Image (cartoon, each protein chain N blue to C red):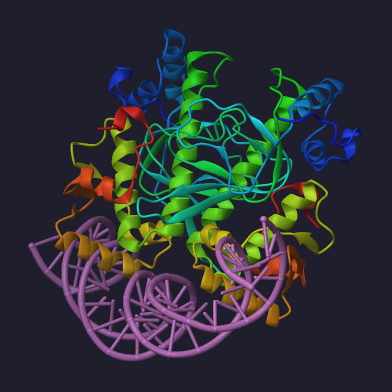
Length: 241
Length: 241
DNA sequence: CGCATGGTTGATCATGCTCAATTTAAGTGG
DNA sequence: CCACTTAAATTGAGCATGATCAACCATGCG
């Protein structure tokens, strides 16, 4: 647990806060609560658990920085990434994600996390939390469709579009480019593929000029027509063309 | 829209009500509200939509009888069943399932549906709704794991276990047997497989004595060891061995 | 009886998997 | 700065699960 000294003093510039603002208007009360909560920011190393399987009560959390993933394991060790946790995302907020022996979450990169202030009934913050939860649902449904009815290259494209969208909400995505600090293995576990096949499919997409992938930075050749092809509908109005 | 004349006068025996009770204690107020709501029961034919894609505001609904499915379509007509709607399930309740151009729901069998009474803040009914929503989430995560990391026969087995569990909550499942009024095509769209392959896998499971499938009635040979093999953890305490 | 829906079968194809090895990149400590 | 270590990306060859296409039954119902 560290002080908030290294967090920006101006809340507005913080990606997480930017996302919350974009989900709904925040009043002074909300800002005060958030500022207070960010006093209790703490860091997490990659591969550390965010929430543990089966732990009954967890404080709701707000992700300030870094990427995480909700994962589940089968008895024989197969792993499924249920979804990703990005800056501005809320974990275990309200009823969402109560970890009843069903899923855990891990850090994929170094993360900074703060406890999420609990919203007063009827408050602006509460409405924003609701909006966030609604988006969570949308992403789960998108994940199901990807896994159930899309081919490898479609799954990758669709997931990248989701990343772009979600990062945009936090102001972390450029016009076509955005960071994806995730290994091909994690990608594979998210997309229901093997790492080898993810690799080959990525090469294909790169050869076709659909994507560029340098280090952690991805650029989409033509997000709009890609979204068209995949029938990808942005979840949040602000991210619609 | 029809009267409630053909609904049981004794709420307790109604599968939907049974499920709600099992999710949490209901007080007289709740029963009164439910009784009133069931006055407005209406029927739905198979293949009729329950909620339409993109419709903004929908009244929350309670399923009294019959099976439905939440589905999504890709541009080229591919269909994904996102999840099933069983007696006692709530649709569009609270924040859940707001249909923002993202998913629709159809009746798989003849259904009886009533508007869900909206719960007073802090009421017993509200807690039950919350429990129901929590379960909805669990089923979505289960669906993701099935589609992402399970083989055909595992997907089928796991889904059947889910059906057994959920029907048990409504008192609609026997020890090992329960109704599954769903075509192999729908099953395929839920499991990310082709109808042909579902058919062949079912034959395999039948030959091995794992399942019996007669008409709409399924019997599992040994649910417990099946659940063990698949690492299937029941979502609700009441359905744990 | 005839049509429609759902289940069943066969033959062939292909997407994606497995296994195993090699290369590249990124640290890390001397 | 370079050996040494480790995680990640890449390549190859062969295999298999599940897809595709196309009939063909079974059943129920008007």
